[in-house]
Image 1 (cartoon, rainbow, N blue to C red):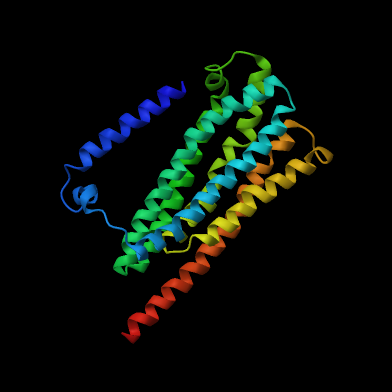
Image 2 (cartoon, rainbow, N blue to C red):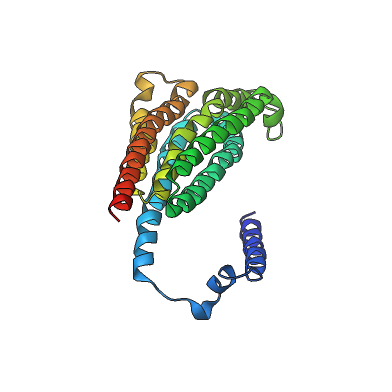
Length: 261
């Protein structure tokens, strides 16, 4: 199974490169190894944006490891049910991440061109589409939960745990749009550390703290998973607020620079 993943990834990469090298300049030139040069200013900028984003993803995975450890304490049926439900969460999360990519691309393009009103519009549109499309898909999967889980198992206990996860996590997953989309928006404006710090607090500190204390409050399976929508809400509020502040600060500074010049 692991080799199948590696091979398929390699084939996909080869196909993408095949088509890119046949594109018009400057795309084709960028893939010409003989023309590669190290630009320190560009490298510094890429690291400033890329490293915090990478650290955010790493910490996100670490927090999930501890939650998975807590899930394991409920037994094999809980593990199987949670894993099956998580598969559908991963598919639906791709909807959010696709709009994250869109907001970075279109915001960066319009920011560079000085179209600041369009940047704001990009944020609003991507937020709306991510919430509506992602939320609709999540609700449909939860509605047909038994059918979806029957792909993996017919055990009543496995289905019960999967259904709990559907109703506690999946149906609220669109709330993650409130921090993923604004976080990507800030990165497009050149601010990568701020969304990383806020997201690390929301997805790591809060969740690890809940794993440590939840048994004293609500030791049920639902009680463990409820931290997902809670952390999404808290993180969404903080990141969205930060994005609006950053937006106002950046656009105001650019307007002043334009007036002076």
